[in-house]
Every structure is written in structure tokens, then in C-alpha cells.
Length: 411
Image (cartoon, rainbow, N blue to C red):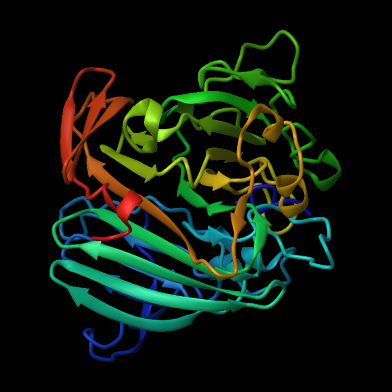
């Protein structure tokens, strides 16, 4: 079985308070869309992360404004009667989660058989603590891995007066080459082309080389397999005579589920972090992610537009995974750690983890509100403690973001 990608509201979540410990000592524990979740908040942001799988959603940005923003996807079966799922990751499926090993993991490797995206996305995490340091509030969770011995500690931080989430996943043990990354998934509106997608400069993009959506499983894809391209607006489709797909305007091609991968240019060449943005033009906001491409070398797009009709999808999923990874598409450990068509072009598809040295993956996600007519992002400018979002229409919006965290790991 392939990855969750190979498997993926703006409405207010149903929230039931089940514990009320002192906020300074412990986050509120709530059951949200059937999953016990840890919750932390500031005046600007409320963040929930599931105990099962460490999956982050719902998140409410601008929570005290007249137009709060809830960009992350929550799978529609969350509030249905529980049923058997094809993979553990699907039980809580929502929002963003850290994957180790990233991908479907269909093949056994050195007597290890990992579930899709690793055991950490479908197993219970342990709450470590919540602390405040100055204007920073941090929730910490941890999990001990069993299939390959190790420990992952997750730190999710919010800063007062910011609509930004700072994530730090620290891996101890789990030695060897492994694909990993974040699986950020956004809820998509139904109106075609309502979301404008942009990214920092990339070396090239490629459609999934093999069959991504299998018609035998009532799944359908539209892109030409293994096609290489240089522009998000010109992605070859499988049907001869049809125009190239434009991935800068989504959703599109209803009835299909597709996967592509962008290989990011290095920090040294672009002069700043790698980034991905999604401008929701009708709602007036931009979701963004920032990363160090030396750690997360690529971005996988999982474009799910009602293209899967087996259980539990049932043709109802409309979401967009913007997944910052070091991996070989969504194929998992075996394909990523060995030679492949991306690694032959000098693209890192796995990281070398050492038992004696922890590895930390720092990541930033957030939301900024933008004026009417803002359209897509043209570029980002990074100045100390701030990011300037510049649109294709020439408009500029500045937001406080401590992007230095990507290199330092400190707030």
C-alpha cells in the first residue's frame, strides 16, 4: 500500500471539554472530531493535536477576529461510526503531521515493515508538558518507536500576537537512512481555481513515475506518469491532445487524484528559506510554509479532488497536501533510501540518522490575511523577525515571523 498521499473546513469543530487542568501546567484535553487532543492557544491562535498520531488540526488563526481562518483538512469520516481503516494513519486523518518514514512503506526493509508514513502517525503520543518562556508557549509530546528503535519529541510553539506555528521534531536513535517530512493538508473549496499556489524557486518538478491512482481500486489520476517539467503552470496530462495542467490554480480536474514532487533550490542560491503558499482568494488569506531545503529537500503535492471512491474516501475528499519532505515521492523507505531517478540527479531522498546524534527538523506554518485582488504570491522577502508577502499584482503584506528558527531551532 502506498502513502497516505497514495491513500487524504472551514466549519467550526465540535469540541467537548473532558479535562480542565491548570493551563499553566497542562493543556486542555478535548475530544475533537472523535479524537482526544491536546490544545494550546494564544489570543491569535488555537491549536489542537491528536494524541493518536500527533496530527495537528483543527487550527484556528485570527481566532478573536470577525473572520477566523481554519485552513486544515479534517477527513469526513471523523464524525462517523468507527470502521476498519486500510492504514492506521487514516483513523485520525487531519491537518499536518510528521512522518517517519515518509511514504507508503509497502516493502519490508531489513526485516522492518513500517505502516504508511510510519508508526508515529497512528500510535499514541505521550504528553510531556506545556511551558511558557517570555512570549512563547510550547506544547511537547513524545513517542517511542518500536519497529526501529528510537524516540521522537514534538514541540509545537505559538508566539503572542502571531498567526504562526513553529514545529520542531527531534529524532533520537532510529539510525540509518530514512525518508521523512511534514504532511500538511489543506481543506479545499469546491470552486475551481479558487486557490492560487506558488513556491520558491525549484530545480524541476516531476509527476509520480508509476501508477498513483489505481482504477482497479476505483481511483483515477490525470497526470502523465514520470513527466519532468520546469513550471507549475505546465504539467503534462495523460490524455493526448489535452492542454497541460496548471497547478497554480486549484482545485481543478474534479474526479482525479494526482501526485507530483518539486525539488527545491538550496538556501544558498535563493538567499532564504524554501517556501510554499496557497492564496485563498475568496476568503482573503494566504497559508504558508517555510523550511530549510538542506533538511527537507522537496515538496510533494497530493492533489485530491474527489478522485477516490473506495473506503473510506467514497468520492468525497477535496483536499491539497503540500508536503515538505526528503523522500522519493510517496513510495516509502525502500525506494527512498536506495538509488532512484531523483537521487541520480543529485536530489536527497533520505536523511542519514545517527544513534549518537539527535536530528531536529524545524518547520514553520502560518496564515496572513491579504486585501482583495492580492492573487498569487510572486515572492517572499525575509527581514529580521518578519516576512514580506509580495503578490503578482504588486501588493505587499508584512507579518511577524521568526524565520531564523529554521536554522537555530530557537525562539
